[in-house]
Image 1 (cartoon, rainbow, N blue to C red):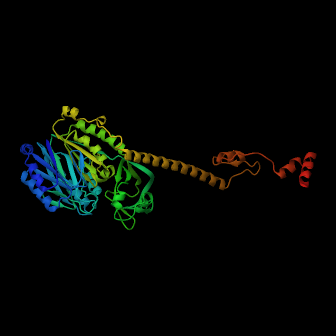
Image 2: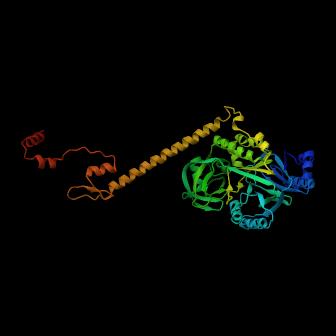
Image 3: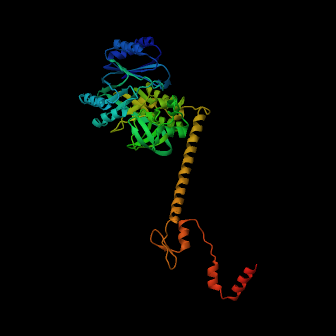
Length: 499
């Protein structure tokens, strides 16, 4: 397998790239060619021209194009460019499957895709899936697929448009789709893929419950309009800037043992919030915080795993919100991967990757796919392994990150203190309720029976139930009974009355 890529700004730049001698040589020995195109500002006419040039280049080309929320080229984030990523497979076979998926037909589309995949005689080693719209329930599409084919090695993402949420699209050799799904099934005995995912967002603040949902719309949290929660905690307004203001604060939920993020992208006048991935009624929610230092640390562990696989190319499908939050640090996460193999991809509105018997629609996640034909090259693994210590760091570079990290721990500490204080108040309330209740007391000795059936002296009982300490004295009535006939007592009482 050989891989070549280019970042271009005009369609005219594509032709000289395709005429490169190395690319022409690779085309001659290839059985199939995957051309992934990640576009930014290209209009439909530009896209048609790109597809025509690729079709004219070789009949072996399978086009998998998508509008992006940012492009990834040589392990770096680009903006408003178009990346052409061409993978030349010497033995693998590619089977494209294009489906129209209007809203409400996700299950039907999933069933059609399952039927087409099941009819293939060769084992599917990898399935690249690209979808065109955040308005369709991609999670439902994936559930339908994995219900029939659990463990399908799937990866990919949802098209983006730089947080405008106006028009996203996918395209292939057969045309452009605003509502659809494009799947590329990859088969071949010598084909090997290694898929890795990482979110890195951590839960922060109190736990809440999704009390009312409708597909991709979260209507209520803890019985209140979902938007009220964002307004209360982040002072976010219900206006056209909502998606930009709120996208840094995903909701996290635990589903089947996996922590998933959910990114909001629109608020409705009724107080409900639209998400790009599903939230199920009754699920426990917390806001998420991205700890950049921890994200970068974990990225090097991922680099080591990918390096041991010795890929010949690396594809990245990373969340647009991840880029929005990490800013320049996003390159620190991806650049080491390009030291291992040529790295391309795009920033998505949702990521796909199989997790064994399920493949949920994810947000705020990076999906990294290593791909190669043939056996791993051990020499390649040693020479391309990247260590964190080899990357020099500017001591001033990450001060904002460090400050945010401290604020995260500060907020967690405050939250923990509030939890402890609340627990103490609950205990005190129980004590008060106990004291206000009817106490079983002996009519003779005045002992009190506790809730375990034991009889306690009055002072012993109250000592157990509260922080009350007793000091002993004697009341006037009891004094008269005990000492009324004593001369000293009669004299003391008479002197007291005469004062």
